[in-house]
Image (cartoon, rainbow, N blue to C red; front, side, top):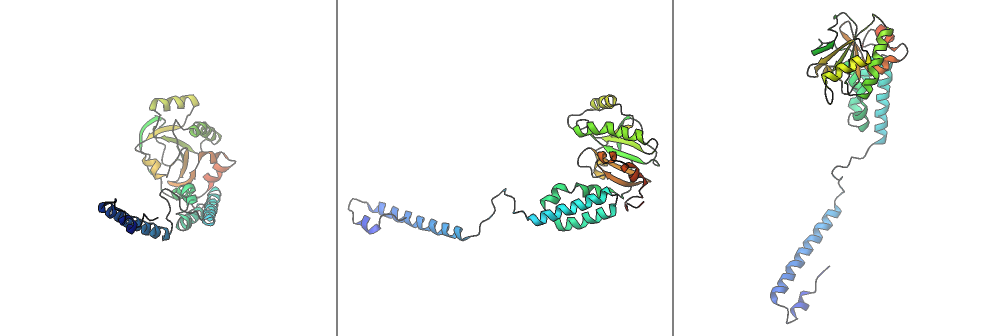
Length: 252
C-alpha cells in the first residue's frame, strides 16, 4: 500500500514541505519492510521452539520391536542375547522416543555378569550382612512407594517358599516423605523377617542401575545373574530357573 503521491501533496499549497518530507521517509520505510516480508516468505519454514521433530513411525516401530526382543531374551534368562540386542539397538535407535522411554530392560541387562560389590550400608534396621558365599536377592524399595508396599510382603512369601535357597537384603535410601521411624513401622506391620538396611549415598542403586523402585538383583558366586522387577520372581518356577542358571549366558 502506498500513501498519496508526493506530486499531488506538493501541489496542495496548505501542506508544509516538512510534512511531505516526513511522508517520503515513511514510504521508504514501508518499502523496506515489504522487501523483508517477501524475503522471509521465501525461506523454508523452521520448527517452532518447543515443538517435537517429526516422528519416523517406522523407526519407532523397529525400536519397539528391538526392545521387545531384548525383553523376551531376558525373560528366557538369555542375557547374552539381551545384551547384544541392547548394544545394537542403542546404535540404531538410541535417538528415538521409543528407545529413550522404554530402554529400562537394557539398563537391567547391562548389570548381569558384573561382579557383586560389598554392601555399602549406613545402618541396619534389622538383620546383618550375609556371608559372601550366600546367594543373595537384593531388593531396592522405599516405604512411600505404593508398588513396594505390595511387593515387600510377597518377597517374604517367596523366601518362605524357598527356605535356605536365597538370602534377602532389602535396601532403602529413606528419601522423600519417608523416615527411619516409618521404615521400622512398615517392617513390623508387614512382618518382614529378612534383613533391611539403609544404603549409603545411593551407591548400590547406582551400581545396579536402579532408576525406579521396586527393583531387584540376584547375586550368586560373586556375580550378578539376574536383574529385574521383584514381581517377575513370583511367576511359576522363575526363581528356581534363575538360581539354576549359570549366569549371563543363560545356559543351564
